[in-house]
Image (cartoon, rainbow, N blue to C red; front, side, top):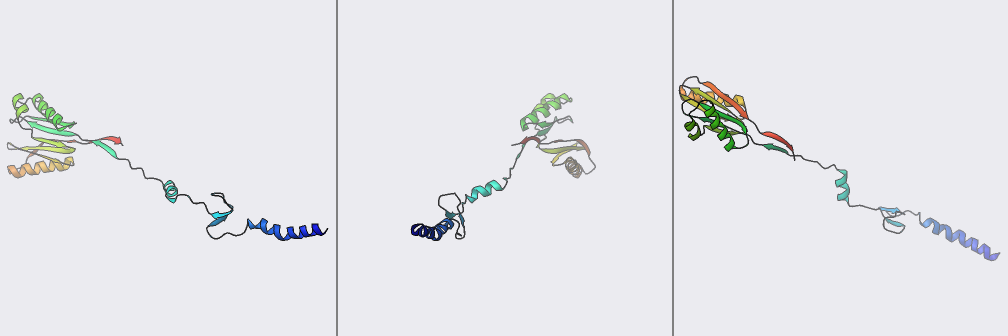
Length: 178
């Protein structure tokens, strides 16, 4: 009996202490029993903060609009015939189309095709004003601005009121997002 009493006494003193050792408080920043590296008292598992922060913060997706330029031109034959083009994909296409329009409107073929183009414009509006044998063209961002600028320039040059003969716009075309 002495042996069993001694064993019971030993078990009462030693075993509870070892059994509770697993559940003792750990120092700050350490969690009891967490299984991220082995052992009983160990640091709290930490993951790469940059990785967790980037996954928590939604990434801003920036889409860029894609636009295609559009060109226009005015050609004259020198005797009052005018050819125009708009919404062409290049300046060369705009010039060619304006020259052909000049011929199609009754202008002298040789002069429409060989004379210097009066105006070439891109992604803008243009206006052509005429008065007392003098003409002026002006390109601006809006049709109203182009018309007013052409009339003002013509009137200032002629010294009297001019008439608006032609105005239109060639605006860039939105193709979509990248």
